[in-house]
Image (cartoon, rainbow, N blue to C red; front, side):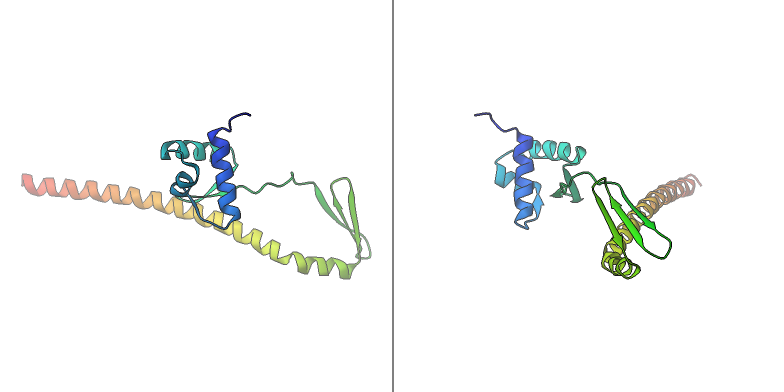
Length: 155
């Protein structure tokens, strides 16, 4: 019998805890696996780098969803309003205009979710940029205050 690697042990623990709707932290992983925190940190970092685990927030992890690669999807609107949806090489749907609208209504939630995800990414980018600018402003203010205080002392 071959011995499982620490990476496999940590990944399996993350998957099991997540499946049980438990919050996955470094400390929880240490308790479940019996591995040292340094080993857990190293293995989780590798799993994050490999895309097998996502860091939800500092110290909290979830397994990456495992899906088959996405197939090519196309939608063609034909004269008269009929719609052809092709999924990969093996599925073709022919929809009436009413069926197309019904499918659109059913897919609206996924569209909104996609838009919300994109807005979240943009907000995170703007927040990061503002945070960097604020740090720079604070640094410059501290320099000016130090310079001002030095001038007062020398006067």
